[in-house]
Amino acid sequence: MKTIICYFSGTGNTKKVVLKYVEEFLANGWEAEATPIENADNIDFSKYDSVGIAYPIHAFNAPSNMVDFCKAMPKMKDKKQLYIIKTSGEPLKINNISSVKIKHILKKKNYILNNEYHYVMPYNMIFRHSNAMAYKMWDTAQKLIPIDCKDIIAKRKVKLSYIPCATFLAWVMRIEHVGGRWNGKKYKVNENCINCGQCIRNCPTKNIWTDKDGNFHFGKSCLMCMRCSFNCPVDAFSIGWFNGWKVNGRYNFNDPENTEQKSHKNYCKNSYKKYFRVSHAKLDKYLNLQESK
Image 1 (cartoon, rainbow, N blue to C red):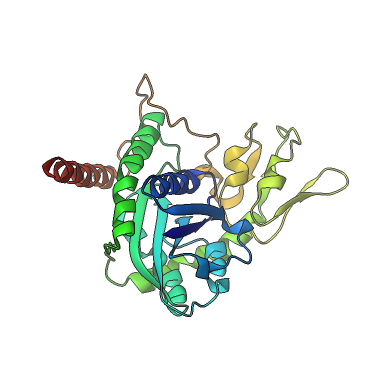
Image 2 (image 1 turned 45 degrees about the vertical axis):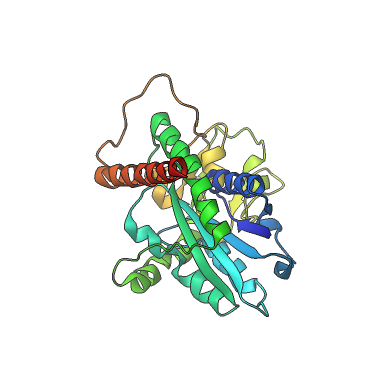
């Protein structure tokens, strides 16, 4: 069996999850590969037995570039198994609606959704999770992915439940696709900038450039993926209307020796507890089944 995962990852969380999927598929005897949608032109999807789509959730939706990618995917002559992988910084059930639009688009093209999974990974905006929480999130994802891969391989259908009025809510929140572009025009770079060019090279929509005098310019195609501000080595960015939510610097996903104080310890507290509780119950059930065989 052969599968491909086409993914968009703003600051690396979704990519980490996707690469773990590829590792598990290969370990189970599948041919598997992954490609970022920025490099996914002219893929012959007919060569694959199943197709995965992976993305970070933006305002309870798929990012606009992922929607555009799905619109450009070719229609299949025969039905193609589809699975969707998504990441976000909080385990709110409203995030389950994020695939509504791309599911609708791809169903018309004969990609039939069998499996859908959501993994909680640390924020790249709003606030910075503690290293202990980042480790816990990634550790949980790594333990769940082998189980979820086996579901995909066995063609066991796994769907996420939606809250009432999900389609309407997704449509309302899709204003982020437009609002993000306008906010991106307000991005600025301060005197900390060392002109390393990393933000220009890594912007997925080529929205950042400098003129002959070295002045930075920002266009109208910003996705608010935070790849520029999050990865800036000298924290030189201001991110417009949302500058109070800026997070800078990569996470250390290793198990921390010291558990630092959480900066927002009551934020979605019960949702995080439920996510980890349900995840560990799923893992325990799987391990018990394996031991009983």
